[in-house]
Length: 368
Image (spheres, helix red, strand yellow):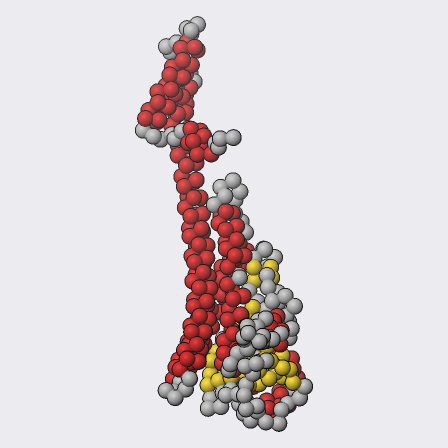
């Protein structure tokens, strides 16, 4: 477990647990799931020595549960937030852009548990979490200047603010998923609407829809958990508290919730796009089948009178008009051609036959 002392002037790393909490600033106790699961009682005792707060047994179990959904709970001593973040490259359990055998983007997540106390923040997360490590690096590199500026953003003023900063960074990772997911859905749409090649990869399309539905449910859980956190913040704020700090916390949590809503809306739009593409695909297939049947019907209508004529001349009568005439064959063939031409003219006037070549030239030929 890593220990950090966060003050308004600097962030320092501690080698051992402090005997008493500092009068200014707060502690950040950061541990991985593996560390807590290996010795849960020792970890709880260390947190109690550092903060004076004992973690309840159900919350200790939740902190090491890798399948726990996004969740919020509050006690008299601390607030607990479980947030599922993307498992990025290098983190245990997943990659940022994992691929299924069909080439779909898989959404792999791991939970991060926050225990927010008055003077301490406790985090339990995946080993080698890039989000947590990046936040630690930025905070440790903070150096105030004499003129009041600094090389990086100021340290957080409270455990709640630090938690919201980390949550904001985790939600931004979901925003980065919009581009690859949109490209993937565009690829499926082109494949569904391509009339030159039949679409048979329905299992991969189902996998893509399942991933979008998973993202939808994930965002809903995250939004519900943060909504409960926001309501708890509002209920626990008192008139004698620093109103400006409280307003900043509300602004931060509203911003995080707005980002989650954007991801949720995007996932729903993509899911709707897949459903629309599937419907258009079947409509196009039905239209193509109708065109084929119409073409076959026209061909059948053209050859029916010709078949009738050939059937009549195939009768075994001794006396038939034109049967023994030297010009009978050519007269019959000419009559057939005229009949076909008349039928073609009639079908074209009735728009039973469309001029596909002319339409293709108008729409697909591009000037060089």
